[in-house]
Amino acid sequence: MISKILEWDSSFFGLKIARVDSLSIFHKQHALELERLKKKGIDLVYFITNKDLNIPYEFLEAFNGILVDQKVTFAKEDLLSKPTNDFHIELNNQKLVSSNLLDLALLSGKHSRFKIDDNFPPNSFKRLYKEWIQKSLTGDLADFVLTYRCNDRILALATLKINANIGHVGLLAVSQDMQGKGIGRMLLQELESICAAHKVESLKIATQFANKKACRFYLINNYKILSEELVYHFWLNR
Image (cartoon, rainbow, N blue to C red; front, top):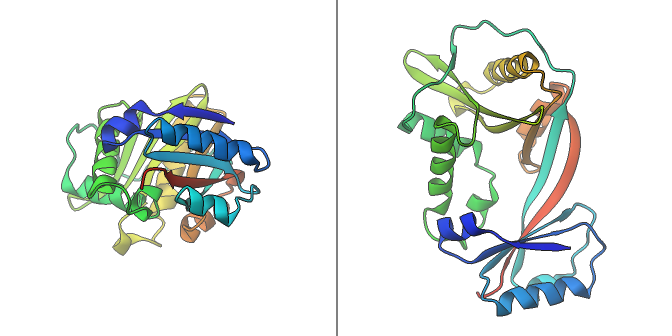
């Protein structure tokens, strides 16, 4: 079990936040660690564990714990190398967040734990995803930002970061009125083509188990489940 104070999260949300990673069978050491963090004045702990760890109800109740995410990470190694050549798909080079892009970023996080958990300060979810798309546009969180544009309207968004020959999809969303028309599949193919051109060995995408539509979409496109995690929020001083 490893605990770590999260400086960025603490500053952004105006809370003292820590993270605990545990893959072991639940035991009283977990309670002792949360008690230690509580005494240090930590407000919130992200508790990350594998999907098989059973946390007793009385433990959740004692430390104000709630299950906020069943995270599923998909991965694919046999990446498509052929681009779509669809002229609607553009490599975005603007640095400012338009209302159109922000709407798509927020849509990509509709199942996010930061939206589900209403214990965060007001407007936290929107601020976080605005920060995410802004830093993606400036290159801090993404190497590539793709958009699908039609009649001066951006209908879809995808961001890609490449680290050590592994591609990571950050934000991916298609406007609700255009879903089911193959736009998401074309964006995914374009991302795979970029990865193949950069000798990327695997492309990873994380989503929530509750997002059934996204999970089916990745499976249909030959992505396999790489890992599954449970994420709890423990509000120690509430």
